[in-house]
Image (cartoon, rainbow, N blue to C red; front, side):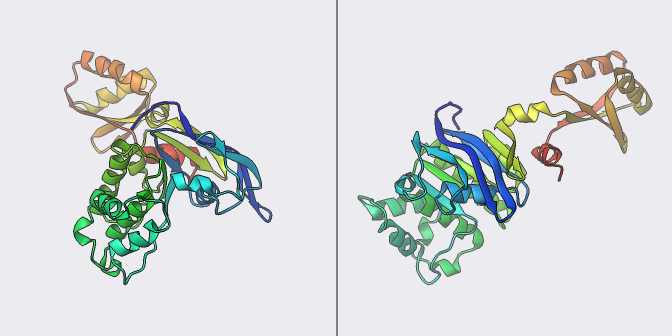
Length: 303
């Protein structure tokens, strides 16, 4: 993943209403060249509507979208030649092979050597051995991987992946994560990545956006945003009462979990806490810091 500031997608003050219900309320954000950009929000937050507006499937009431420094117009779809997308579950012809499904899509694209390109993407998503198999025989994970192959078939510079791991088992999720890393790292594709699996976003995204009720709540680098929040640090020592008295004296919030003390503390204060515990001659058996995107997300969205 790259962290430069060349903006490939700029969304500015998007508004969308359906009847009296406002789905998007002046939503703005930027995706930078090279990002794996996590797009998060509870159900009904406006994520799917936003993605459909970017892809020209839904027209916004107001606001603008710029892609590669060009303003997108709803009636012009030329920019879509540079964008790939997998929205929810992919849909293929079950009685056709993986190769034949991709061939039909390739015929609609300006590919100089479609056969070679189809083989390239099937190799990338680990389906080359099943290229002649009918898609109806594929597992859901294989279909998701074929969906990613379809999204990158025409060599886009930008790909939208909407819940690509939805419904997959842990191995399927791991396979999809590795493919996402690969196409970002090796092919230089910028990825806008929507997911409900928060640990997945935390693991592979460098930047992220959290929205709620159609509005931006937080946007920025994942590590920096996570560092804004307090950590839950688990401490276990030979004398829990003495440990608690030290933590109380320093004014930290805490609670007890079995024989361990859970302390709410900022990361920068952890070395100080360890130092004062060590000075008290306590035997420290365990100290672990726990930070999760899930806790951060729930706090921001109040869900």
